[in-house]
Image (tube, rainbow, N blue to C red):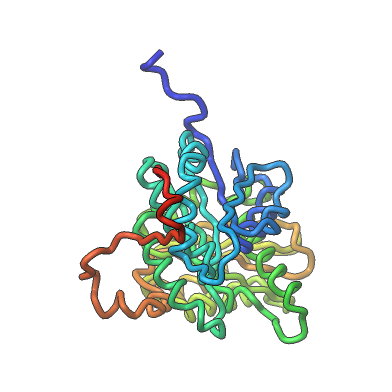
Length: 342
């Protein structure tokens, strides 16, 4: 029996951290992505309300006015055994979180490191803060660097480029729509149903060992809507990374049955002229459930750096010459109440 493979050795796991991660995961859970288990983790009970019957991990860090990412990581030490049990028989794991807040910036680096130690293929999907959220930029930059070190692939969704209109919309609705757009984009790329599928294997081929990957979305209702939507998605990439660094991409169009093969060809050709110096490796996907509006979901890989690297100025100044680059953990407790932790 010891020579037989362990049960569930091919399990695909998805974990959502914090408000954004739990919201996006709840949308993904309702789609056919071939994910076996969905796990929600947060320090806020309300975030776990997005889960249905899936696994929920509430990390009770108490009431404190000094919550930081390191504090969250420190309190998470109490749950290490439970987290390792969740990870233990997974072959592939998606880690989904917003960066910049305390929960996502604290847990994403920690759990990506745990997954790496367990030998699990790890894809981190991170949502970066808006440009106006200056107070979150440094935390997001530091967390992104650690996540990149511990992940086999990193997919970045930039709030500024994902949001198309934020002028006349209530704030809760605005954030909810952004999270839904990200989940629709991810599911469109990976889903196993549709007229022309991309699928999990092509996703892994596109993003593995290719630096950062950038998720962008474009929409159009014009006459040449497929091409216009694609151009809008590419323009979003320009605002995040150096377009010439791109070496592979997935272009998934969501529209109606009137879209022709010529439009798909034209959109792909336009993509090649705008990214990767004309040598882009492109996978195409298509779905006719989009109605009259064409949506172009673009996942572009190969970027050595993004604008978010500038969010961590110490890293740029020191150039990886820190005396101790390991993650810190902070625990507020009285000495008399200390117990051995794993």
